[in-house]
Amino acid sequence: LTSVTIPNSVTKIGIAAFDGCISLTSVTIPNSVTTIDDNAFSGCSSLTSVTIPNSVTKIGQAAFDGCRSLTSVTIPNSVTKISDNTFSDCSSLTSVTIPNSVTTIGSEAFSGCTNLQKVHIGNSVKTIGEYAFYNGTSITQISSEAVVPPTCGLNVFANINKSKCKLIVPKNSLDAYKQADQWKDFFLIEGSTTGITNTVYNKAG
Image: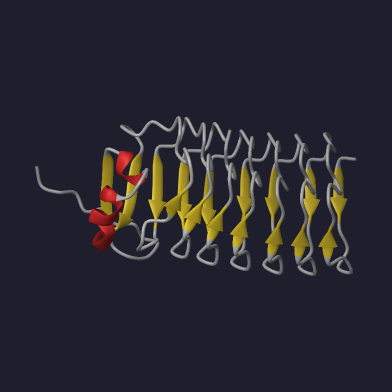
């Protein structure tokens, strides 16, 4: 199977529906789909890009785990939770934007995404599960719009180079991030104006 078009009559992509379809390069998900279940596309190692329509409210555990050719993914504003291992070992993913609708990023959600360079975390994220960005060895910038630093499980940012990775946070929350567990481990923490523009204010000297 190299490509699949899912018709408009489908509302749910079930557990492990396309698990291990290693030759699948493209998939069209219609905006009738509300649920992408656990392991739906796990191990689809040839899949290069996925657009998740904004009808989807749930993306299950390990839904895209091991999609090693995935270079881009669009997560819609309808999703409130990134489940455990959803995008783990997506080693070609270079950037990810967590929309403002998401409140929870699950354990190991992006672990093993070794080519991930930029991460943008929306303003509603409250908790980030353990090892969520583990082994993100290429990450150079994390921007968070959350005014209150999200609570982190164990080793969320383990193996990220915290002396080179820039952390951009809301200007008025600078001190909070500098004191918050795991966030305070970053050497380069900068304040930005609110909103997605991320204008950086450099301290003089």
